[in-house]
Amino acid sequence: MKKILVTGGFGFLGSHIIEALLSDPENHVHVVDNLSTNPLPLDFLLSIIKNKKHLTYDIKNLIDFNPTESFDEIYHLAAIVGPAGVLKHPGRIVKNTVDDTYHVMDMAQRMDARLLDVSTSEIYGGGRDGFCSEFMSKIIQPEITIRLEYAIAKLASEIALVNKVNSSNLNAVIVRPFNISGPRQSGKGGFVLPRFILQAINNKPLTVFGKGDQVRAFTHVKDVAAGIINAMQMGRMGEAYNIGNMGNKTTILHLAEDVIRYTNSKSAIIFVDPKTIYGEKYAEANDKYPDDTKSGMEIEWKPKFSKRDVIEDTYTFMSSIKDPKILEYLS
Image: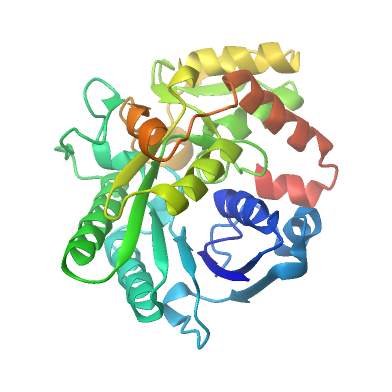
């Protein structure tokens, strides 16, 4: 049986990855998660995850996790997340992110395990007018923000990992997801689609930040999970792969209009300054959408879910939740 460690496995993306991994009866999945950024209560999440026979877990900080058993694969997802979620951790994001990355690198080397590091599309700094390719230079923005600290922390971790691969026996690969969305995501971290969906369900105005002209490529969480697993199995050591749906490229305003249309909501759209909600330290991301050519060629990944699928699947999940406590977690 293959033994797999998933750090941050009870988060939004992590829960979908462990569910996909557990669909193979030959996999045993162990999760380590401190539950600090989890969108759903653990008992509820465990009640909806299938095939839990081969799932075990530790609830603790990753840096305190020192297993005596060995793993064959390590998926490293544990991280501070969200455009609003990062605002609570100024000046600590680099240390926390890099410390955790070194910890999993050391574990992977000691166990001779294959490591996959989940990075972020934020490292591109907006790329070239929003277009982001693995072959382009990374861009550091002139304004120092907490969001920039997050991006730099992830980029520093990538660089350390690649240098370690090139100078040791570490076997590792990197994935850079773009605007992951779908069922189980919470609006609490500043994520836009769950906020829009809940507003639409309640026929409240959809709050669009600024003019709504920000460009994004919303990618279904199941597509991202599949891409990450493909990268683990087929990605070249020390290489990074974009996982994002170019076909779902849209502006935030158009996303809001689509949400209203696909959910048959009576909501209006209003334009707001996000700093009135999250405070003066909030920073909007630059436009970004992915070049997915490398992922298609090297790890045989192509997205399956359209923008409409992303919206409708998120809406179906949120509409099914009747417990007000669970809805509070998602709001």
